[in-house]
Image 1: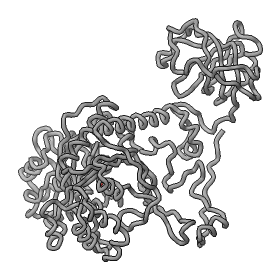
Image 2 (image 1 turned 90 degrees about the vertical axis):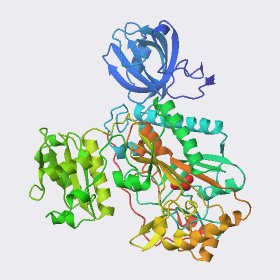
Image 3 (image 1 turned 90 degrees about the horizontal axis):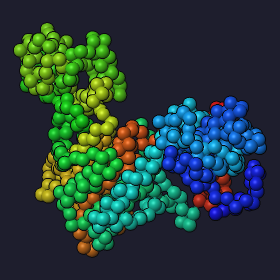
Image 4 (image 1 turned 135 degrees about the vertical axis):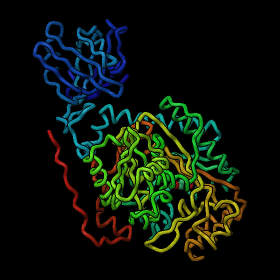
Amino acid sequence: MQTIKFCKFAPSINRQIMYRTHNNGQLRAANINERVTLSGWVQRVRDKGFMIWIDLRDRYGITQLIFDEARTSKEVMETASHLSREFVIQVEGTVIERESKNPNLPTGDVEILVDRLTILNRSETPPFTIEDETDGGEDLRMKYRYLDIRRAPVRENLILRHKVSMVVRNYLSQKGFIEVETPYLIKSTPEGARDFVVPSRMNAGQFYALPQSPQTFKQLLMVGGMDKYFQIVRCFRDEDLRADRQPEFTQIDCEMAFVEQEDILNTFEGLTKHLLKEINGVEIESFPRITYDDAMRLYGNDKPDIRFGMQFGELNAVAQHKDFNVFNQAELVVGIAVPGGNAFTRKEIDGLVDWIKRPQVGATGMVYVRCNEDGSYKSSVDKFYTEEDLAKWAEVTGAQAGDLICVLSGNANKVRPQLSALRMHLAEKLGLRKKNEFAPLWVIDFPLLEWDEDTQRYYAMHHPFTSPKPGQLELLDTDPAAVKANAYDLVLNGNEIGGGSIRIHDKGTQSKMFDFLGFTKEEAQNQFGFLMDAFQYGAPPHGGIAFGLDRLVSILGGQETIRDFIAFPKNNSGRDVMIDAPASIDEAQLKELYLKVTVAPVVTEEIPPRH
Ligand code: ASP
């Protein structure tokens, strides 16, 4: 019970009130004739003068209120006539049977005949309609995100996220994992993405960095004997925001001691299966596994979407050594069979060619073969190939009558991602990427290192703490690109939802790795001395994995963008347009932090509200 001490709009002040006896998603036909008190927001007003209907909304749903000249007092009728969208009100009344029932609303059998009405707070006209289908554009909704959150689709996404977190916490806790918090103010290290840094007032001229992940801390927890750790934790990466990335995002971060790759895969396959069952009611027997090399060979991608086929068929043996020079000169000739693709019109095929020629994909052209229903073939290179030749292409790519074979050629490292992009594009076009279908897959045996053309050096493919596969350390000196790691990704519907590795746990190997990656002894000691020191005091063998929670929830929720599952996300320029951050700070603050700003701050655009 609460007393309203002061409420400008309340007709009865200082009355002992209970804000509500029920929520707005609760009342059913069984409640007819009960007296109830409800509170919430006015979603819609239908005012016929002698009768007013209001949709009253809260987190739980919508209940219809009715004010009827014949049955409602003049005073209440008068107050009701002044209500408008997003006013916060409290009503008392009787549950009655609705004349025209609404089968789409759980409360649609009843309405409340109101006899007391209190305006708890007024509202300006909101800048967009707060309903499932809104007229508000993305920018406007982000600026008024607190209003957007009142909308059921956004609210349901946040509730789903909560459920996923709870399922994860309960599952891992039951399996003996302990959630441990690790610091947010840490030290900047050069490996990986760019760090966000925080100046230290107490330590002049020095900076903390925000963690890109708790990687080294979770390893230190293993040295500390915690054995099984997890944390649902915020991570920060100052990257240029490619589509659907956020500068701060959340990981389900995990680490285990005394484990091999197999233990980790089994444990986290268990967690993912449990999630799919609890959240989506989907049961999956066991997750297939594919090596990195095979994933690249068969899908041109280390996170293949296996909800559909269209595996790559390498055509060098059957398509080269004819008179077609484009193929003869190519390192790789590779194709996919598009199911039913022979139905594409010439215009559609030209559209595909234009699509892959865009700079984002960068292919130079495409050869295609129509596989006709009568078993004959017709290709864009009929001049060079007989039907017999083309039949071999069909065999390699698995094409059936009625399919279309799309073939790209060139440098293997370029052509694989290009054909992968085309494969995904076609799957989208053909409706093969079904949102309510879930196809998880482990990608294993990643290379330890990745060559970077720009800087002409190797980088750790996962991170520098990843261990080479047993017995492969020596290869580092002779054939670094061939070294494989016990590193793995969990892929779901073409998205990497988790990744991890078995770690190095001795100082010698870790030091050799830093050395190989181009760190001087001093740099390695300066940046990671704490970890190598720890490895001298009995570090157990250990390994782990981290899941991207935002992405995981969005896939489980059958949607594309992670932004929709974050309460207060940033836009593509890394801005929070609601609180208008980042922002300049005043001179005194700068001085206190020993900072000097050398550029004029960027002026941000004001988004005009629409009424
Ligand atoms: N810390 C790693 C990452 O953020 C995951 C891991 O190796 O556990 O990608």
